Length: 143
Image (cartoon, rainbow, N blue to C red; front, side, top):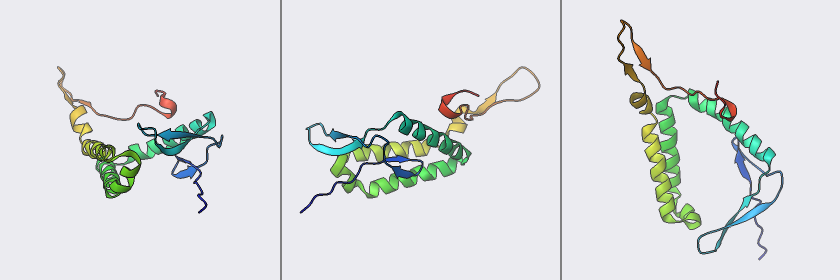
């Protein structure tokens, strides 16, 4: 039987792309057993990934907190449904911990505003509110 290995690709901007270098790094578990090949990306690949993430960040920020939570809950459900398949690669405990983390942050998605935003007491006859909003743009630069 001829074994044909898949070309490892990077997930950037909603699609799988080949790295510009075409090279890979073998990745092993703690016992030294081969798990997979990881694409060796170039500076251009990294720049493209950062630009795609910046574009996605604005779309994500426009979603309601409830919708963000629902997306994260759905991600956790899909990962949990494939626990056996994922556990074969990274281990059962790691998959359980990952699902737990995603559920944790999904639970917080619609609570940040209540915790961090508030009415601030002031000594004048007006209201002072603290609200959360994104303050960075591409590459983390402040506006």
